[in-house]
Image (tube, rainbow, N blue to C red; front, side, top):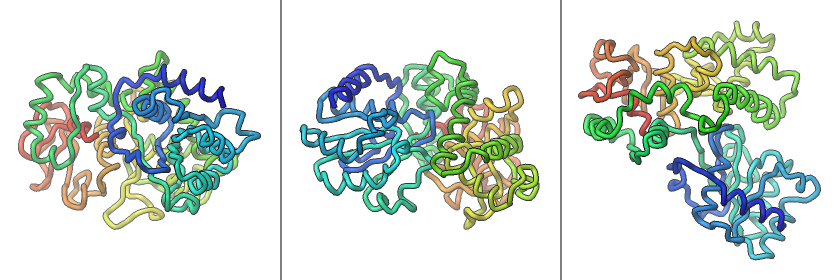
Amino acid sequence: MEAFYKTHKYLVDHVKSPVRRMLMDEVDWTHRLIAIKGSRGVGKTTFILQYAKEHFGTDRNCLYVNFNNFYFTEHTLVDFAEEFCAQGGKTLLLDQTFKYENWSKELRECYDRFPELHIVFSGSSVMRLIEDNEDLKDIVSSYNLRGFSFREFLNLLTGNNFPAYNFNEILQNHVQIAQEICKDVKPLEHFETYLHHGYYPFFLEDRNFSENLLKTMNMMLEVDILLIKQIELKYLSKIRKLLYLLMNSTPGAPNVSQLSKDIETSRATIMNYIKYLKDARLLNTLYSEGDEYPKKPNQVYVHNTNLMYAVNPGNVDIQAARKTFFYNALHAQHKVNVCKFNLDFCIDHQYHFKCSNKSENGKSYSKALYAVDEIEVGNKNVIPLWLFGFLY
């Protein structure tokens, strides 16, 4: 136990979180079992260590534990939690939870046996906690940690502290909001950089970003999909090929019949693989209103623009990048569907958007809203595209 406390102290003393994530204030930390989910590379470990630093410091009431530790090959989580509670411990922070074989059953047992114990655990975006986890679905409070928003990226680079705005605030007051922001910074000077390498916090590390991201993507396939979904290793090459084919044709309608021939597997398996790639935050799927999985999506998108530049350096279509940025910014908090008015997106069943550059807007459906690149401040129904990066 002392070795864990020493590790905890070192990690908390040395954690560096250059941007305070908005999720820190959205989590209800009074819940006894909290899951922080997110795709690989978005900063889940840093997030929970920052929580420990803010709320506990190196107080022994709180302890960070990583299941990479070989200690748990011979010791159970329940026994460890019992010893921790016996020593007065109150809050366990569990990282890499999916690497522990019986994680959901033992989290449930800890919850039932130790009523004074709070547990915060990190998990892959692929893990299903609410929908079909019989052990945890009625007791866990789950939150999703996303990559850096453009707002967070801009605050980090410029030293500002711009607040987030909700969707309605941007629709109603976008001119005033953009003018206020542009007094302190020129967002367009940083927007293209964000599209290239601003979503994943590890761009701050002294390593080649694209190579690091490609490595992370392969880890998503090998661990977050194969291991968690219990898919045999021999199918990895098929999933990798499918991802590459889709990323080279997005955004667009997937030809499932052709993909099944290319991958040499069934149409049903292709649809399952697309779902897994979406859960891993490598792809996004866009449906017509009322449709959802397991129906074929109308369009497939890359999850975020950084992935596009990593896989196809020097060959990214800027219009595809604009749409991908907009979809990624909106989809977590809003319903995003195909727009029936020959535009790009329908948001929350009522707002119809087209993504364009400054020379293209104003030429479609009269009630359309335009998310326009290459402008700092908009007017009326023309909203700067970059401003949707301030939603969180």
